[in-house]
Image (cartoon, rainbow, N blue to C red; front, side):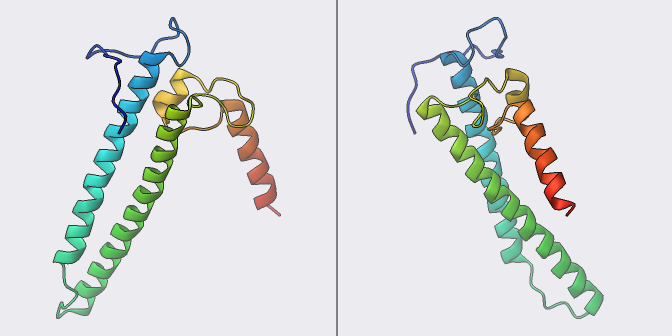
Length: 141
């Protein structure tokens, strides 16, 4: 992990009054992403422990089926977390590379509000909407 010399006040929130993707904003989002990643890893470890604990040697078929369904749901949740961790790692790399906060397609700023809502966003709102319209058009065929 790269050490940073940026010191954020405890109540810091990115603002439109600042230069876009200044050092303070980048540090804020880096910390937000790191904290999110730690939380997902912790939840994932808990899921793995739960999967190890529960045996499927239930005498009742309905109980066994219910446990299998729960385990399948846990595994899907874990897979989603794994994919999200990958996106978080990509976002952290973009911070390191100086590309974070800018649309992959247009190069325009993604925007603070969008990044607050979805810190792993790679497209500005217009590009995302265009992408979703194209996806919908091709999926309807």
